[in-house]
Amino acid sequence: MNTPIVILNFKTYIESSGLNALNLAKDLESAGEETGINMVAAPQAADIYRIKQETSIPIFAQNIDAITPGGHTGHDLIETLIEAGASGSLINHSEKRMKLADIENVIELTKEKGILSCLCTNNINTSKAAATLAPDYLAVEPPELIGSGIPVSQAQPEVVEDTVKEVKAINKDIKVLCGAGISTGEDMAAAIELGAEGVLLASGIIKADSPKEALIDLVSKI
Ligand code: G3P
Image (cartoon, rainbow, N blue to C red; front, top):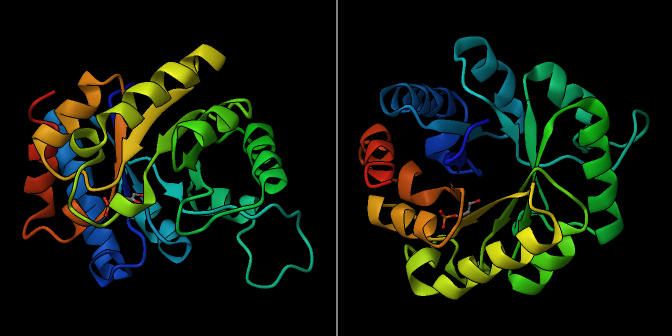
């Protein structure tokens, strides 16, 4: 996928669940078509299949568990997510942290199955460690800024800039994204200026009066 990229994490907001998830995915699809920017939906697992049937946007799962088919009640199995329509997944989101060995295992599973991985981290040091696992995307998100409306690219520019520098020094093929508090065109432009190749975001778009207009504004200054 060409960068810059926008990944919208639907989380579990009511505005981005069930039928609302489908409508939001359609907004993403038309905003992506109008702006020419790659926009990815990361809905809840239960919403993936319907979005896949009714849109043509790339869909990432929010989580994959480090399991193989068998007795694992309540888990997210990679095979099912792919069959439903996922072409990638968030891994180790701040709201769904994983053990290091499981992160490695899940990244291996994504490579084996041919889907994309977006590994989430919380700071520069964990980003360096995460880079050794060679995900396709690495998204750095300081947890204290998540959902705060305070954009990481403006409040903690050094986190974005140094993460890009350190990750690229370890593996130049990893595309570095940033997230937390991003919502406007200025926020995304600042992220790109700092070297990020896209953003991972949620509430600023999901809670907007018009998510489609908010998405168009988000990419209007890059
Ligand atoms: O995964 C995106 C995320 O954690 C950032 O959330 O609401 O600050 O855009 P938000």
